[in-house]
Length: 238
Image (cartoon, rainbow, N blue to C red; front, top):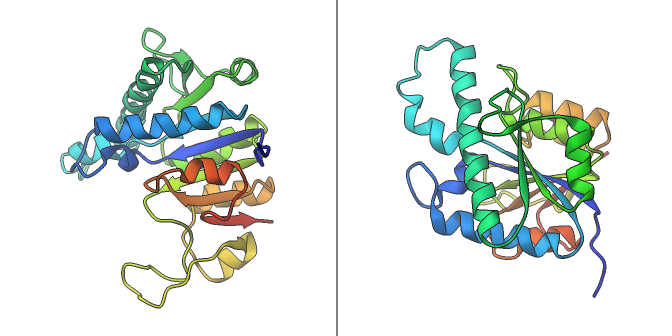
């Protein structure tokens, strides 16, 4: 068997990815399929950390949050990511994977706090580490949390799992002539004003020379193909 292309990766999952075809919340079949993909990758000896978003839960309360103080709304979003992280860890436990949820905000009765040396220890013990509550600060997205945690744990790449199969020259839903890039530089992304991550997250990856791979988590087997270094999604590199 050929070796995986990466030893340690940071997987960024959007909360929306957990919804499946539902309007909001967690779709059981979807989370089980994702966890099966994760299990396949860990069997290759890859050390995997995950940053999870909260859009699937927060979307359900977003209308009520309209006009709300931004910091308060952001803290609500962080708590939504903790709920997703717990669901993900539980689904992993049910198939025999060991996962540890670490939260950037302190709720020690529920999950342990994020401590970098402890996270590194878990990764070395082949446990899946799920980072919850973003960066722990309002005004920063979970994309920024992914870039930050990826840098902190020495990940070789940030895998941004979305519902789109890579970075296109334009919105493929609006422009039938939009073309998919197989790889593109950070500078070219900025020049062409392409949306890969939010500006803070993107700048952090660029400064740290931490490549980003954008791919579709909806495509069966895509995560494994990315890990094996196959032609899947778009690689954004220095």
